[in-house]
Amino acid sequence: MSKPLTKEVIQQQLQTITLPGSQGDIVSAGMVSDIFIKDGSVMFSLSVAAEKADDMEPVRKQAEDLVKSLDGVEKVMVALTAERAPGSSTGAAKPAPSAAAQRPARPQQGGGPAKLEVKGVKDIVAVYSAKGGVGKSTTAVNLALAMQANGLKVGILDADIYGPSIPRLLGITEKPETYPGTRILKPLKAHGLVAMSIGLLVEEDTPMVWRGPMVVSALTQMLRDVAWDMEGELDVLVVDMPPGTGDIQLTMAQQVPLSGAVIISTPQDLALIDARKGIAMFRKVSIPILGLVENMSYFLCPDCGSKHDIFGHGGAHATASDIDVPFLGEIPLHMEIRERSDDGQPIVAIEPEGEFGTIYRAIATTVAQSLEGAVKAAPKIVIE
Ligand code: ADP
Image 1 (spheres, rainbow, N blue to C red):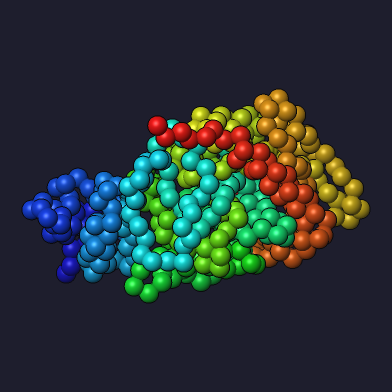
Image 2 (cartoon, helix red, strand yellow; image 1 turned 90 degrees about the vertical axis):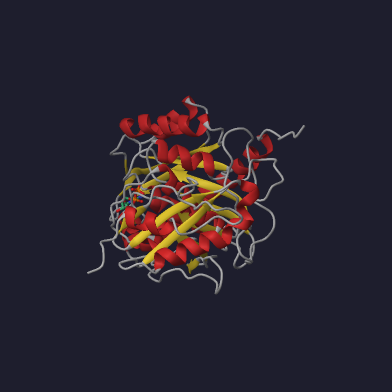
């Protein structure tokens, strides 16, 4: 009988992979991150010096092929984590040839740890809430569709490792494929958006214990190794972030080259206290706050069309001005928003000109304006 699949078994195998031009192996060299195994999926990263990244691609491939050949392994994801320091001229691990345009995503706010390199995208916007269940994913999808309806080329990345829901919200069922002979993933298409989700790379409904290195390797794969510009350069990539203010969220805020963050909150005080914490987290890492959206702001009666402020409507607006962030708008609580999402037919995709489509598009317009302001106000990086 074959041995059960454990970290130790994988590590032993990886010890057979030697480093180019040396006697040492990749495990003894301390390059292998914590190895994560769940239901036949194996994920880990190899950390390499940025200037060696190109040379290490064959080693990464060798490690991936080796682990893939082990009994009980169905899926393997091995990422090279070599990031380019802002301003440095040494290339990060280069993806195999892809459709990626040459210009990396906009900002690099200066200072802090190196950001992941994302090609073929002008601006990356995080949609974030400090707690779950406030409608962050629903808003992220409808906001992305509203930006598209406003004439932008838009992609969406579901980085919510705790509850990836974008495939369901967009009605995506197929699995992503790589371009033959490369590790570059083709994003999936839904309602005109290009999309990728952590839920498509790992099994859905799998509770995962995520540790820092796993998050970085998953992010690396989803940002650097996806041909986001498959159909031309994106104006905006919307990232559905995991809720909360822990280390994982901070790591993401630091490593993804975000142009800014849109914060989603419900009107209740409690949610707003959390929203303030979230805003403080982004400020700590110098990511501009593009604004605050109040979701489930008021109840819109489906029968009579009248508004009912059952949740203390307006709380987010007041908080936004208190803490000096733009207020982006209010989205009512309405069955149609929920039902459309559950069917994989988001309301803005179906009725961009409808009552709710108009609300989301107005928010998208303000986000675009806020984005221009944030980019202009971003500190210039001076290389001495
Ligand atoms: P989160 O990403 O914050 O966990 P979701 O986007 O998954 O939240 O939304 C939680 C639930 O609330 C879902 O069932 C969703 O359909 C519903 N929902 C979100 N926003 C609205 C809204 N404006 N009106 C009605 N239902 C909503």
